[in-house]
Length: 271
Image 1 (cartoon, rainbow, N blue to C red):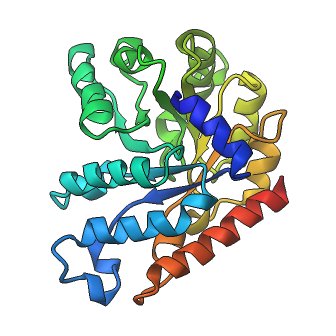
Image 2: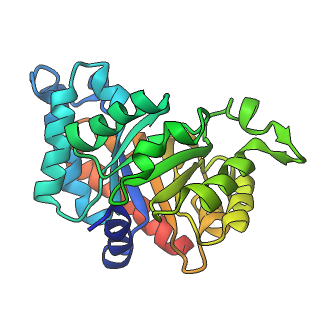
């Protein structure tokens, strides 16, 4: 099955819009793992195995692994998710964007080297920079639109022909880039008004990856009210730190599961 088919299946069968972000920071690991030479993999595997039945996707952030020289752990982690929890798609959060020839290598990195099912991309070099990803109908192409960080409006809110740039991005992706039906948009939970504007602009054509709940303070009810599609779905709502570091003891995975349950049930209640 393609990424989009897996995602729709998870929405239906798991009844969950929650995505757990995997952003390992060894300084925050429980003490019993800090001297483990394979701590990054062990920690993330524990989180994955404790929460897999509660999520629609996992989202490892490549910089957290690469900064630690832990790319091998990332490859093994994605393989573990596919083997132990088949049907749960993996989004590689790498925000790539480069000229076409280089983009081909980034696509190979994401899909062949790491085995991801989808990848986040920066659209600001234009279509040729994302074309190698768009060509993969079986993979998800998740385009930055209105991001959750405080400084995102510096460029994304610039007005062009009377509309902010992020709306032009959303419309271009929906109308021109989504021929394979494999595109999504990234819109932060911290901007619920903009989330609603984009949903009204693109209708049900595109799902949204929505970071920013939990530690960043995004409001779940506002996200569902403004961002859900006509079926009450169309969202991959990501939470990382609030789940990963919910516990500091040897039962960290159990604490992460409890935090994920709270998030999943809050999303269900808001639906």
